[in-house]
Length: 198
Ligand SMILES: O=C(O)CCC(=O)C(=O)O
Ligand SMILES: [Fe+2]
Image (cartoon, rainbow, N blue to C red; front, top):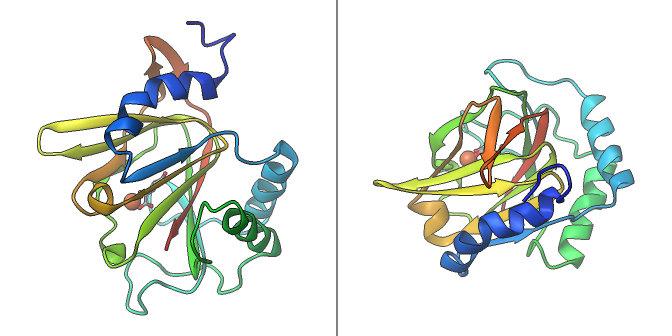
């Protein structure tokens, strides 16, 4: 396999096959979801809004907080931009989400940045976490006890996880500058992910 000639989506399909089979009832992974013009529209919209810098990675959040007293979710704006309303309608029509989210958060990771292992505590009563990778490809990990699964999320993909994968497994992203994908080094680049909790 050659990372230069094989598409990251094909590589991800091979890399993630066992994970998807193992957690068939607790996750869904969609590849090559949006046309590139729409991805650019989404990213330009986010880059035209202010990013929060209070933690290592930059963040934005929109819409309603999940919990009014949430320490995690202070919306940058209560207003959800038009292009994201369009995104959610698309996800709804495609059957990727069952209902419109009330809000969402956005993470930006530069090479070398990640997020520690955690569970999204404020969403334990909610059905599903929807992780939309707009830009940048990297490994996302699930860990429980001594067991770990490494999922390769290429740009323009969506990982939905629910059930015990959401409630009992920790998830996180290692702060690396490159990942080894199918035995080959792949440099990280800027990643932007939108996280819906619904
Ligand atoms: O950025 C991601 O892909 C995941 C982020 C995450 O787990 C979170 O914000 O709770
Ligand atoms: Fe999370």
